[in-house]
Length: 385
Image 1 (cartoon, rainbow, N blue to C red):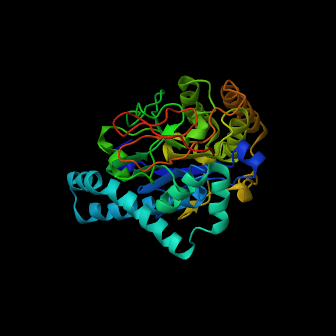
Image 2 (cartoon, rainbow, N blue to C red):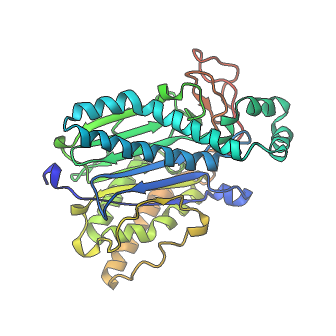
């Protein structure tokens, strides 16, 4: 298919983590997608993972502000394309301006929320009880810590694709011919439970960005997932296999088969693996799915924060033929087998971005090394999610 003829659609889901259900914590992920028409291009997808530690006690708000801010900026970037036919101008604008504008836009949104909803005595007292007076003073001095979050984004336009990442999580490309690719190199510092974050000072210096012209070939699927998903698998190969399996399900039974089952798959992955909140968004080319199984309803202008209250939103999908249902059930078992190869106990306790040291990678586990500097490595570890 020629790059200028490709039609794209989107689906996604977010589930509250098994450990959060047990503790009563909210879903601290957020997911948002947009297209001006029932399908794209242009089409955009943004995810965010709120840290959810004791210090990041407003991270479910921080993640929502992250997806809203980033989506608004991606839509503005499309305006550059409308004013200039040259991809070089769009690429330069994205690389030179987008990282800083995402971080500063998020910080401005946090400041606006704080102006209307200052940190309460109850919130600070609870933090002091859990983490001590020093932690309380740190958040009072740097209130952005209370909202700490990551961000993942993908924008597909008619002539280019753009990928953005700050912090942990995964962006995967699944070609027609099989295999799974990453559009950006993985940050080697983001090991164990450490992450970069929007709440760090000069966080724009940690933003990864990849601009790619569409004439070099298009993937069949683009997957964005918060790190609770990859952390539910025993290894990288088991996680990457999900991209291939999802493409196979779509090619045989259509996007509705994935849409109808995605919430339950993610809940099973959290329960059997990380225990963390999990959000997964999929941008897919229309020609990779059977025409009879394509969604009949248009993509919403903005579908955001699929939380526990709407966890059953996809349960009412129209029934399929018995044969298709049987194939879909078998595909579900294939995905489930891969998921259940992962650890039975939470592999990640969701450590937050607690420091704002310039260029420091934020540790997300109390077992992380303490007392470091930006040049020496991570400093004090955070609390838990």
